[in-house]
Image (cartoon, rainbow, N blue to C red; front, side, top):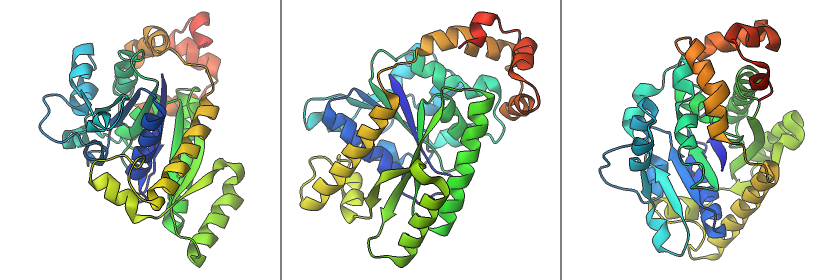
Length: 314
């Protein structure tokens, strides 16, 4: 099972639309797919057609990631009725906002990773829709992820947000999980023949080079229409939908090439380094641990945490 977060530190850039587009591509390809809705606005849950009252949600999972709670919080998307396949959603909840601490503890930051370890044999791909902030929920998603796609629209403020996101990811990767990698920046809501858009795209390419994904998602009303109807863009009628679906197919192919064939074991990570770190430093905030990592060598940190030689190699 591989885990991909779709993130932006600026709201309104179409982050959820990108997450649902990639979910549609994965579902169309036949991948066993789970969408985790960490955004308290719950748009990904709605876009997957999961509407109603749910006994358990992602908020319950983040408070107590026990196996039975995780399974009760996952529901089958009505997309599954359209053709054979498997796409589920770990249901979002406005209650998760209360868990979006600006300074989460180490114990809290690993809970989604621990939850996903319970179901890693059941899915090929997990796509996490994160909130537009760098607080606890987003960093919880990143710690559980193998790759992160940063969504940016071609505007000044989105360029600044993309830069902040890159720095926050680099800090977390250095301090806590070297498995995490930034896949790249996906430009969304691109308007052809827009001088401002062309300028901002050039600005992003000059700054980040090949970190900008070769695909760009044009602004098309069909995306919002399909999302509002709770339907995947693949199979939605019309030439415009076919063109946009093809773009998400290519982005998913890029994701798959980056991930390769290796599948990291979450059970192994949780039974060793992660759980030991929880036990030793569970009450300390993530920021404290990252600050410690920034000022000490890896060997000194390992000695401080009491990690054995085998664990250091993880």
